[in-house]
Amino acid sequence: MVSFLIAYASWSGNTAETAELIEQTLAAGGASVKMHRIGTGPVPDYREFDAMIVGSFTWDQGSTPDEVKDFVLDVGAKPDHVYVFGTGDTQFGGDELFCSAAVKLARFYNSALEPLKIEQSPRGAQEIRVTAWAEGVLDHWRHLHELTY
Image (cartoon, rainbow, N blue to C red; front, side):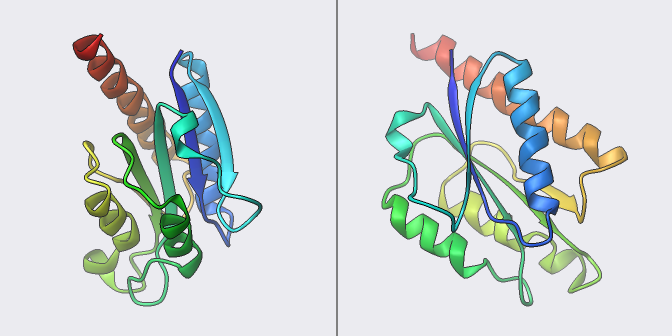
């Protein structure tokens, strides 16, 4: 069974809600999932998991929140398998700044998949996008696993 660490930062609840939906989708697909809200408690050891998913909101003109930057420093490494999602709001900076924290994190971690970008809340039509992305993460991991074992 594949194990995922989902580490996320959330102030408004949108990123937390997205993380929970990803968790439910991965668990339904047979994965073991540990949730970690960034900024609360010690950072889990990424080496105890097969893959890591990092979620962040975008803040202050396209910035990555300080607590997420601190999390990256606390992890202290670039794990091989990192997937990224983010929440944002196009009314503050348009498409250019929309979920730029997620884009930066995906680039930093050399994520094999494009980051999932959610406008505010994952409810409604966006819930389908979250579920499809999480299923894609699981499929990607399984494909890698089949090729290496």
